[in-house]
Each structure stands twice: as C-alpha cells, then as structure tokens.
Image (cartoon, rainbow, N blue to C red; front, side, top):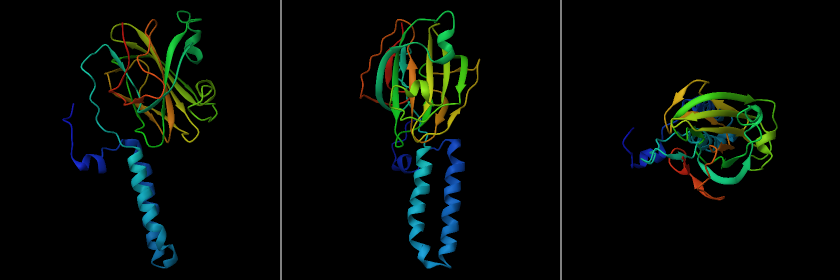
Length: 235
C-alpha cells in the first residue's frame, strides 16, 4: 500500500482511473477544437474557459485515490463513497434469491447512494471470491436513491464468499444520470479487501447484502468512504 500523500497536488491532480482517460481526453479535444475555431470566429472565445473547466471536472469524476482500511479484518467495509440511503431486510437480488440455499431467506441490505461529486470506483468490502456474477441489462433509470431501483434499474449482482466462509452480496445499480456500469472482475476471481472491482459512471448506488445473521452497524444518512468505513462486523 502506498504511503499517504498530504500534498495539495494529491487533491488538485489525483490519480485517475483508466476508465476516465477516454472521456477526459475527448473533452480536451473538443476544447482545443473550439479554441481553434475561436481564432476564426472570436464570438466562440467565451466557450473556451468553461470547456476547459468541464474537462478538468470530467477527469476529477474518475479520480481514484488510495484508501487505507482498518486493521480489523473482521470488519465488512463500504464498497462505495456516498451516504446511506436505505437499510432494509430483503431477499438476495434476482436469480441469487432463487438458489436453493437462500430461497425465502432475508438478509440485511445496506444501500449507499453516490452523487456525481463522489468517487465512483467501487471496492471489495472484505477479501473473498466472486462465486457468481449476474448483469441485468434490461433496466430502467429511476433515481438510484429510491427503493424500487434495486429491482427496476440496470444492475450487476455479485455473490461473494468471504475468507471466513460467510457469503454476502453486492449490487451495482445504475441511476437517473448513471447509464453505464463497468464491472472489472469475473466469476472465480479472488480479491483482497478494498481491491477495486468496478465503477459506475455519473451517479448511482451500491447495495450490500450482509451475511446471514450479521446486522448493520450504520444508520441512514451516514457518510461512507469506500474501503475504509465499516458497514458491519462479520461473525
């Protein structure tokens, strides 16, 4: 793990996730084209600075800072930056809930809502193996903070087996503005606690289905930091 960087550079020029370069470079190209056009049509000159700031904002949206997890390995950490918008008991999502060992069972689900101002890189709550992965592409785009978004919106489900054998679920949910989930892991892959597993572009939500018998240690409205803030304590 990298040493913490407390310089101003870390805030003004943070590390950018690879997914963001194509969008940031596209924004810069458009800015350069407008600047060139402004040399012929001066009336376009006023657009250059706003477009330059917009390009900087696009890069910042894909910022991917290092995170520093608590030493207690039994803590299940938040997979996303944002605020807790929902805590509810429910069955596992989509086809996972139809698996024989989980059919009819309810688990505590903690939902973290990410605004466009949050870091959108998602991290593993604890070390484990991706048992199953399911992408539900035919979805709607309701506001991600609404309860029905977990069943109606485009989403990607993960069933994860933690190192202690307990199983939990994670769901990436596209939102009103977010239109693209970018999973970066596959079934059978083993990941470390806090390791990146994907992102969602431009505002969205993460649901965490806690292992059977585990209760959340957070409350609605609480601010979360991916890979650092505990959601619950594993048995």
